[in-house]
Structures are given as structure tokens and as C-alpha cells.
Length: 462
Image (cartoon, rainbow, N blue to C red; front, side):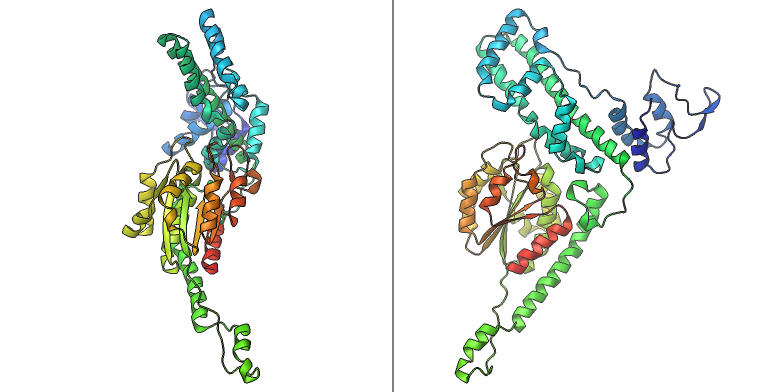
């Protein structure tokens, strides 16, 4: 039977579209003017495909939503010990015992992997709540929440555990054929756990979409980066130029006031004491100083749009900045300053992102900062403002707080631009609760308006 939530979610994406099960239509095969709920039970997917998806553009939506409401959401997994010979089972137990002491909190995950036990609903609900699923609002957030939950549940470490286990079994003398069969079963179970998380996120988002009332269209500046559609991303790229023009006008006005002179009462009083306090010589505040910037941007999947917009905005405002050195990182630090000297901002950003593709759970800010210390620390001066754009998630690598503290000491100020709410700091693989104290402040930047306000504040402070 079709889930009513499927229909509601479909209606939200295709208002006014006809859907079988909700719209009467003549069925030539059965000679009836009905919804044909009893038709095609042997092939439940074929009926909605034929009667609902009359336009090719709807096919992707159908393929996305159908398994969320009609799939079992329980992955096919094997209880691996039951598939092994007594000798192989004993070798597996011995290998696990030798590894188990180094696994810590991963012991339970390894047990589920070996026994082919899917996550319970309580486990998924708890991790979904921790990931912030209750605040989700659209299917475009699905990849982001999948990665967040997979990080929290340590699923990115499954392949490493499998490799360690295989190495141990090889040392114990297990045959290559048996090793390969065992690896295949382990990887199948690992894929099943990842797929279960994916299905949970998709179904949760679909249910929330179905239960929400339609909302008025948000101002583009206020749409969170995690909710941007492709068309909105393109619109924001155009908007950034207008936004940069506004910020440039504000910065130019500050410069003009500084040049024409903002009266400095204290200096004026001191300078005119020889005239008995009569203000014959007026004194003005010093000219506004343009900031010297160092940008360090996380361009992993979750931060990619935010990094693109920040880099574009800063380089559109280069006439308001004394100097900018820019670096990006995923698994290591890369100097991109020269790219922006050779290309216009938008072309430079496109080139940087195309040449630095995100990987799979390979973000390493600590290791990247070690490279920065070795190769680029010399760009820092007492006049430099360092901006680190990132969510502080480090895939359980060494965060290298010591290097951040050194950057803080050598620069004028070290500021973070982070889209995550402070309640998420320190959860899962987040080291933000450690990075924040080793900085002069954290700006929360979840949308373009907040990002622009943070940039404007830095330009104003000089």
C-alpha cells in the first residue's frame, strides 16, 4: 500500500502533478475509472512508474523517494561466523582478541560488523538527533547528514578495521582464498551499515518534508549553505558581485571619513592647552588601516560552498585589503595565492575547486597546519588577521592545537568562520571545542548574510 507520506512529499516537489493513488484516471487494461490500488501488486514499482512518471524529469524524483517509503530499510547482511569452517572461525576469534584491546569504543561496531547485525532504530534515532536531523528541512541536505551520522558512528573507520583484521589473519596463516571470502563478507556488511544510515536519513527527511507546511520563499542571503539548491548557488554567485559592491561602498565611506578627518577630542584638548584650552588647532583620528589577511579554507564536501563564497567575496574586495595570502586544505595545505593573481576571482575559485577534489573522510586540519608551519608561517606578521574557515571536524586526527596557538601569538588576531552551532562542537570528530579557545573569536556563518557581516566587521576593524 502506498504511504500517504510518499504522496505528500511528492506533492511538495511537484505541485499539481497527477499521481496514481490520489488522482482518478481511466485504466484501459482493466476497463475501470479507478485508482487501481489492487493492480500490479506483483510489480509495485511498475505501476507508479507507468502512471505517475509521464515526464522524464520526474523519474529521478521517483527513484529517490520510492525506496524510502517502500523499501525494508534493513540491509542484507551475513552473520559471518556461521559461514566459516571451525578452523577459520577459531582463527577469526583469535585475531579479534588480539585487536580488540586497541579498538576502544569501536568494539561494539566491530561486533555488529562481524555478526551482520544492523543498527537498531534506537541507535539510528539517537545518532540522528545528535546530528541535528530535527532541524533538517529538505532532501538536498541528505548527503550532508549522511556524512555527519557516518562520522559520529565511526563508519569511516570500518575499512581500516577490516584491513587490520586481514593483516592479522594473514600472519596467522589463513589462506588467501579464505581471506578474500572473509573480506568480501565484511565489506558487504560494512556497505550494508552505510546504506542503512543513508536510508534512515532519506526516510527521515522525506517524512519531515511531508509534515511541513509550505514556507514563504526565503531571501537568498538567508538561505543556509547546507540547504542551497543548484539554482540558488548560481544565483548567489551573481549576488556576490552586488554584495561586494555594497561592502566596498561601506569600506570606502569609512576611508573617506578617515581622510577628511574624524575629530579626535582628546588630541585636540592636549594640543590646545598652550592656548588656554581654546581649540585653535584641530586634531583628527588616524587614517583607517586596511587589513592584511591570511585565509585558511576547508574545501571538503561539507564546507565547499562556504569556502567558494568567502574566497570570491574577499578577492572581489581586494582594493579594500592591504594583502591576502590564501590556502585551502582537505588532507593537506595548498597555497592558492598565485591562482588569484593570475585569474579573476570567480575563475580562480573554479580552478581551485576543480584541482582540489574532496575525498572520502580524509579531512586533516592538524596535518595541514603542520604543513603550514613548515612552509608558510613566514607570511604572518603582527598586522596579519588570520581567518580559518571550517567546521573544526578533523576525522579523529591530531588537531595540533599547539600550532594554532603559535599562529595566534604571531598574528594580530586569529578568527574562525564556522557554520556549526556551538552545541555541535566536541561531538563526533569535532575538535572545535579545542580550537575556539586558541583563537580571538568565532563567527558563526551559516548563510551569505552572516558571511558578509563577518567580512564587513573585519574590514571595519582593519
